[in-house]
Image 1 (cartoon, helix red, strand yellow):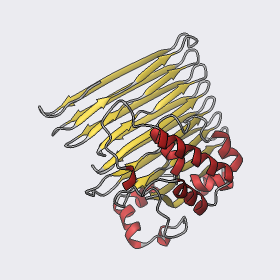
Image 2 (cartoon, helix red, strand yellow; image 1 turned 45 degrees about the horizontal axis):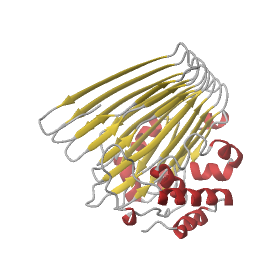
Image 3 (cartoon, helix red, strand yellow; image 1 turned 90 degrees about the vertical axis):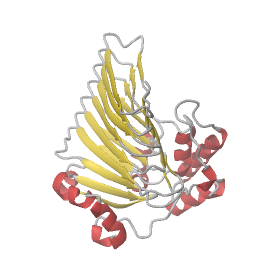
Amino acid sequence: MKLTKEVVEKISSIKGEPKWMLDFRLRSLDAFLKSNNPNFGPKLDIDYDNITYYKERENNLTDNWNNISCDVRNIFDDLGVISAEAKYLDGMGAQYDSEVIYHNMNEELKKKNVIFMDTDSALREYPELFKKYFNTLVKYNENKFTALNGAVWSGGTFIYIPPNTELDRPLQSYFRINSKNMGQFERTLIIVDDNSSVHYMEGCTAPTYTEDSLHAAVVEIFVGKNSKCRYSTVQNWSTDVYNLVTKRASVEENGLMEWIDGNVGSKTNMKYPACILKGDYASASSISIAYAKENQKLDAGAKMIHLGKNTKSTIISKSIASNGGESNYRGLVKISANATNSESFVKCDTIILDDQSKSDT
């Protein structure tokens, strides 16, 4: 499907979006068409005219697994998603191709005024809160894939944790690409207000096809004063998926952001979770592991930007390469002139299991 203005307008029309969001999508489309692939990292051989940019949901969004067709429900059941929700989680969302099909959270969170829903619903139900944060931390025109996401974004997770609120158990979303040549472009927005905490987990899978699919998500996280956010990801995309994701967090005074990142799937992975340590005494960590096998190029790492005084960051990267796979660490630490008495620790370890594999830092 060739990505045109008409395609973008149709997506926005189906979703019944306000004019400002359509305008945002069209600006993003223009930026996408004018931009090039990254000039660093693995070579990207993506046929953008062969990607399905949007696929409508067959049934309405539901909070009951029994309302989902048996074949789709069985996929999530086999993945352990359904059983995990009851045992370990305070809330669960499930996205299938372009749209979130299931979303639910327990009554205790509702009493605490926690907002946990798909991003499309948040745009409709909390327009002022949504617009206040959307596209403020990751700008649509930063790179080709933030622009692409801006043009055709669909689904994703919206979380707002009110002040002085702690959750006992994690929230989770699961993303499934199940169609050939499918593009998945979820948008996730997490706001952790002052003196609060949340642990959010996401999982990603897809069946293997002979033609490539594309996953280009954008994540924006805002960590308030004295607050904590942990974001855990395990992506096990099939080896025909390009996984090109932009994730960034802003951390206020005495806040803590933790990225825990597992990369064991995808054909090509480019993902570098970032933290902007704005407030004094803010801290952040990124712990990642990547396992690259045959025909896989996993380019992963982290970025830490120190702006506040007495800020701390830690980056720990573990990688494994076997059977001709390529597993790389790519990172950045920047301590600004005003970030006095700040410190950062970076540690990268790799295991290369044969003569055909490689790993670079």
